[in-house]
Image (cartoon, rainbow, N blue to C red; front, side, top):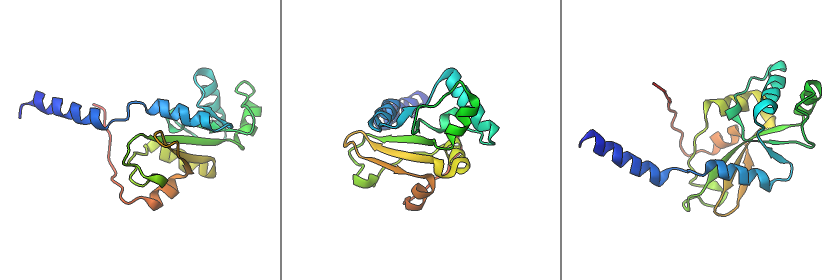
Amino acid sequence: MKPIDLITSRRVHLARFSNRSGAEGERTAALIQSDWTERPRGAALAGLLAALKRDGVILKASSFDALATPSPLDYIDQERLRSQLALTTFIEIKTANQPRVKPGFAGFFFALTEAEIQAANQLGERHRVALFNKLTGELLLTSVPEILSRSRSTNWQVSVQL
């Protein structure tokens, strides 16, 4: 097989199995819950990460997709924000759009990034994973330890950028 043929076949394979609208699903899931907001952007995100860092929690922006808060966060006043963060849950959203995913998310295949696992370790109960089935509307709020305990298989991999 020629290298170009291999690349072409891989592209076809990836196009079939990729979830190109993951971000759309994350926004949909975040909007379903009345106390969830999308991850902030720009200066608000920088302020949020800075407030966490002052409390010894170092997160990457990519480690969560939404926030569950009892009231809107004050991204301007860092002291108030730090106190609000104690009541804030950081949510990573994983969306499914394949018919093979059964109720309760049996058959759902997805990856947890290093940043997501580190966030779960640092935040403990303040970190949740929302599994959202875009086809059925089913939403399951769980955690990284719960996911790992019910996994039928885990394959660890290393991603590299050259």
